[in-house]
Each structure stands twice: as structure tokens, then as C-alpha cells.
Length: 319
Image 1 (cartoon, one colour):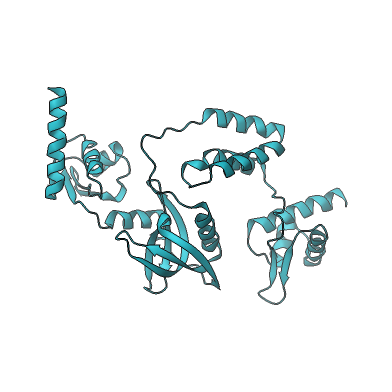
Image 2 (spheres, helix red, strand yellow):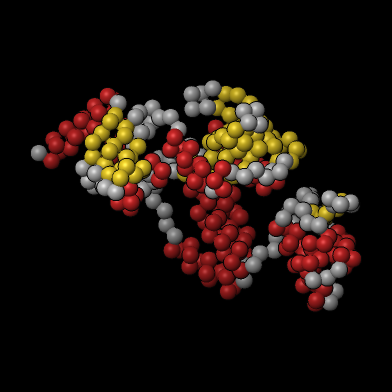
């Protein structure tokens, strides 16, 4: 092969790895060649052992199919560094992936060019993590991977789901986005049976199964998946109710607290409402303790008793 042809085929392979399916005309435009040249280059890739599927007709195209072995991935410098750093920190949020992560990282570092190995080493030696409390429920990496592919391909899934009340049922949904919040992963999907948007915690999902049915991409209300999920989480029912009317602006409270998001609602220029409701009493106390100004509280009796007990222990400790 000539050097130009080799470079073009590497670029073609890279394009095939970035999207599930390409039309011949799109590839030709990206590569600056004719559709006929694309067909020839696809044949050359097949001769080299890359499983490239093709379909004829108006809706036809090319895609890199799954083979017996994982084909080499083509990464630019930024992608290689990003993957290496992500692998270094990936073990913090997934179950049973620590050893696999280290094996993948070792393989990547072995083939990194010298100019990149120094960057990755510097980043790795500079990173550190502290765990202040036991980790909560963690997502299964196999479930996460299946859902990510379904979101990308707009493919309907069926899966088992256990609600917060312990009720298990089979669900059928169109996965749209994966969102992480507060150490938990959530699937934002359109439930086909209920014809409505739903949030599913990944640690409660079992046996996600692709149906083979693809659907057009749905627009999330507001066009902001993260904001939509934050709103749903804020409105979700909790075991203990605690709502504070704070004598400070909403901007002031947001600037001095973490993770409250849409739970802080302005009432006027100098007053806001903070919904500190939660399933765990100590977390309510932590949220309220983070408010650095006066407030009045409307809360359930068990919340008030917990706060009084906490205050009594604090007074005894400081007396």
C-alpha cells in the first residue's frame, strides 16, 4: 500500500469505530474520495480481517460488526490520555471492576507512545481518592454497558426492576440517557407501557435484554437530560419531610451548599425555600447544618426529635 492509502484506510477504520453505521456517501465525503474508492477500501479492510457489514439500498450503509476478537482501536492523543485517566479512577463507582480496570490500564500503558506515557504517569501520581463513608449501592458494569449501547442505538429494552418499596416487575422502555447523581447511576427512559418518562436506578435493574427494535430518538422535555433528572429526583417522595424557609436569597444558599440544586426555590429577593426532605435523618441534619443563616422549619415529628437529640448531644459535648 502507498502511504496515502494506508493513512486513508486508518482514517476509514477510525470513522467506522465512532458510529454504529455510515452511508457510503458520508464516508466518501469525510475521506475526500469517491464512493467507489470507499467500497474498495472496505474490501481491503475485510481482507485484513476486519468484519465490516454492508447493506444495499436507500437505507444501506457500512458498520464494523462484532468479530471473534476485538479489533484494534484507533485513538488520538487526547483520547488515549482520557481513557488512561478514566481507567485509573473507574473503580470508584462500579462493582467488581477494579481488577479488570487495572488489566486494561496495563495494556494501554504498554503501547502508549513515550510522549503520552509521561502525561499519564504525571496524572496518575497526582490523583488520590478519599472514602469518608461506606459506598452505597453500585452499578453492575455489564448492566451499565448494555444500557449505554441501547441509549446510543435507540433500541427498546426489557428488564427486571425492583422499586424502592421492594416490588419487582418486568419493564419495557426506550433508553435515552444515563445520568449519575450522588454516587448513583440512573437510566432516563420512556416507559412504553406507561407512555411516560421514568427514572430507573441501575442498581435495581436486572437482566436488561435488547429487543432488536429501534425507535426514533425522543426529545427529553426541556432538552436537558441532567436538569430533567435533577427535577425528578427533587420531586421524588421521601420518608421524612423537612422544608426550611431560609432568610437568605436562593443564590446565597446555593453558593454555600452542595447538591441541593432544584430543592432551593426563591420566594423573594431575600428569602428562599429549601427542601431538605430525605430517607435518612442524619442527612437532613447535615443539610440544615450547612445553612449559614436563620430559618424556620416545617418538618415531621421524627425529624424534629432527631434534630433535638442531635442538639442535646452537641451541647453535652461542648458543656
